[in-house]
Length: 94
Image 1 (cartoon, rainbow, N blue to C red):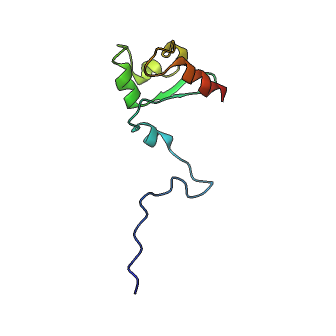
Image 2: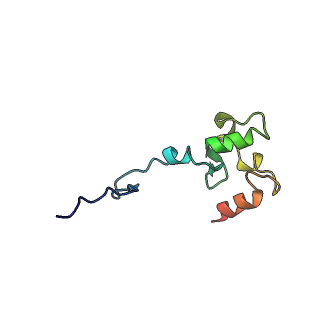
Image 3: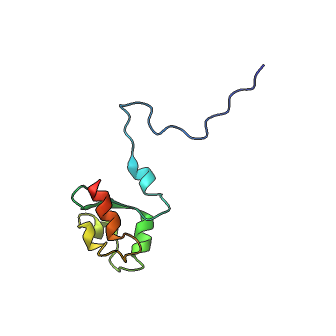
């Protein structure tokens, strides 16, 4: 008799086309700073790692203070260590 199959190491995120994926549960716990922007470059969400990194350079870095602002307000040039302007331009172009 064969032993029972081991459970999968990773459960699928989607079971079918009708399932909805809750990005925020994954986005909020990413260990790297991440920012979500819409197609016009408006900040939609930031994760905790981004806030932790941003508070080192900005006193007013909070989710409420960032959401709704143009991404250019927080990524002014290519010398920004958290979010270089070139990276934002590349993301918006795709």
